[in-house]
Image (tube, rainbow, N blue to C red; front, side, top):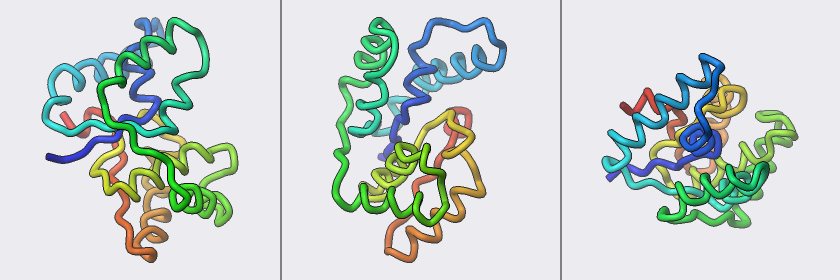
Length: 154
């Protein structure tokens, strides 16, 4: 069974109160449809980095996010994942402010997940960034997870 890493933005859109903004509302709807229709087709996982990120913000929203991902295995950050994430940033593949995004990719690569499900178009669902990071990972004998939006896995 293929593995899907549920990145923080996916989890947030999944459980957030419906938004009036059309784009966000559509993403929420797609996230909920994927959850209802496709979740059982994959082994879903999260990471310690996701748990750290979902613990920020409004208390009620934090609780909803935690409840959504509580049943899933947690991939722990490792010295290698921290070193890889730092390498992505120090080599200019991702900006310093995207350190946690770098960690999502590093953890995904180390644990050989098949997909990272995300709505983060700036740093994760970004073909140019993915290509550059994939090259670096391949040079270290690691495979880049496919980073995609839920519609790609419908």
